[in-house]
Image (tube, rainbow, N blue to C red):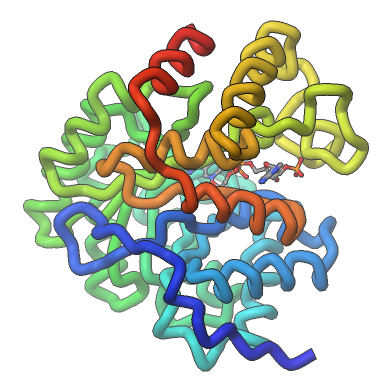
Length: 329
Ligand SMILES: NC(=O)c1ccc[n+]([C@@H]2O[C@H](COP(=O)([O-])OP(=O)(O)OC[C@H]3O[C@@H](n4cnc5c(N)ncnc54)[C@H](OP(=O)(O)O)[C@@H]3O)[C@@H](O)[C@H]2O)c1
C-alpha cells in the first residue's frame, strides 16, 4: 500500500508554541513507548502513524529503550519512515531519549557523556536519520555531575545530531539547575517531559510555574494513566489491554477498587459533557496554556481517533472543574 497523507492535515489541528522557542507542537503528540515493538503488529502501528499524520500530529516521541525488545520501536519507526514519511521529514518533529538502562555494563545507563553520545548514535542508525529534532535526558542521574550530562546535550546539538534538547522526569529544583546550565552553554532547554494526568499531579507543585518562568515547554506523558483514565477497565481487564499483557507497564495491581471508583465518577461526568473519559482526561490537561502538547499513546487507530476528539471540547465550566477536584480528592 502506498501512503499519501491527507491534504487537509493541517486544517483541524492547533499548534502551541513550545516555551519561548521557534517550535510549535500539535496539541496532541504520539508516543511510541508501547505498541510499536517487535511484539506488536506492523500493519496496525503503521496505520496509527498514518492516522496521526493525516490529522495534523507532527510530533512522534521515542526513546532508545522503547519496544520490547529495547530499540525495536526506533527500528520499526525507521521502517515506516523509510516506506511512507521520507518526503515529509521536514514536517516532523522526532524525539528520542537516553537515561534508562539500555545495554549491559557501566556505560549503558543514567547520564554520562559516554552513554548519551553512544546511545544517540545507535538511535540515529536504528531510525535511519541524520539527526533528531529533540534529544532528551530521560531521567535524572544522582551520581553524574549535571554539568557533564548537560554538556553532552550541548555537544550533541553542536555536532548537528539533534536540533533541540530536553529533560524528562526531573523534579523542579534539578530542572531549574539543568535549565540554568544549558542556558549558560548556549543550548537552551526546549522542553520538559513529566508524567502528568488527573491521577498524577506532582507537576502542579512548582514545576509548571518554573517552566513558564523559564520559557521552557511542557509535554505531559501518560496523560491517560496508561489507560486507567478510560472506560476500558470498568467491567474487567480486557485481554488485549496493557494491564493484561506481560510486556505492559500497567500492572493489574494498580487497578484498585479505589481507583475504579474515581474512574466511574469521572466517566459519568465525561458523559454529561458529551465526551469519552479519555477525551475529557486529555482536554483537562490542555486547558492549561503552560502545557504545550499532550503525549498520548494508542494501541489501535480507533483509540487515537477517539482521543483526537478531545480537541472539540477543551473548555471546562468552574462547576465541572470543582466536581473533578472533588472526585479526585
Ligand atoms: N519520559 C518518560 O519517562 C516516559 C514514560 C512513559 C511514557 N512516555 C511517553 O509518553 C507516551 C504516552 O505514554 P502512555 O502510552 O503511557 O500514555 P497514555 O495515553 O496514558 O496510555 C496509552 C494507552 O491508553 C489506552 N488508550 C489510548 N487512547 C485510548 C482511548 N481513546 N480509549 C481507550 N483507551 C485508550 C491504550 O491502552 P491499551 O494498550 O490497553 O489499549 C494505550 O496504549 C509514550 O508512548 C512515551 O512516548 C515517556
